[in-house]
Amino acid sequence: MSDLTHFDENGRSRMVDISGKPVTAREALARGCVEMQPVTLRRILDQNISKGNVFEVARLAGIMAAKRTSTLIPLCHPLPITSIEISFRPKDEKTIQIEALVKTIDRTGIEMEALMGVSVAALTIYDMCKAIDRGMTIQRIELIRKSGGKSGLFAKKETE
Image 1: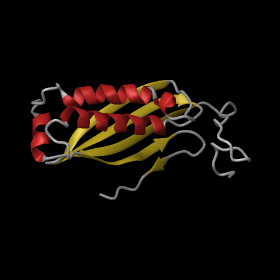
Image 2: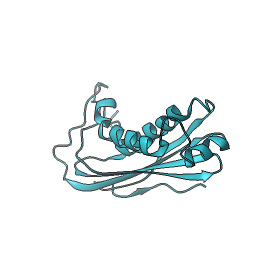
Image 3: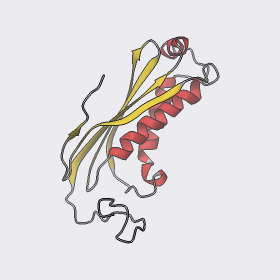
């Protein structure tokens, strides 16, 4: 079990001790998509959803979620987030791509915060549009890039 840092030598859960690690600038970019009917995406882009501006509400939800990651994922360390950017772009006529870029200066990575931001932004889009399109799907939430710390740069190879 030595490769699984959230477990001790007896298999018990633990929060990893990061007190001896150096403080470094860290950044993570996560991405995901929400697929929907083309008419739903058109209404979002035209700001014709009765609950309001879908992207701005989802952006705030994603930011708030990233800030709360350590309260939702049991063994995540609370981190002083220095920046969160949530962005949206139509990928095609039925898909919105969401990206979260999150930064900190600390002793551990910020990947979970970026993934949480994308996840909750996607869920918020679903919530705001479910009355007109319950068939929406949230897809492929993934870490695209991270930098900082001992492991340095990770960049996922693009497959699309």
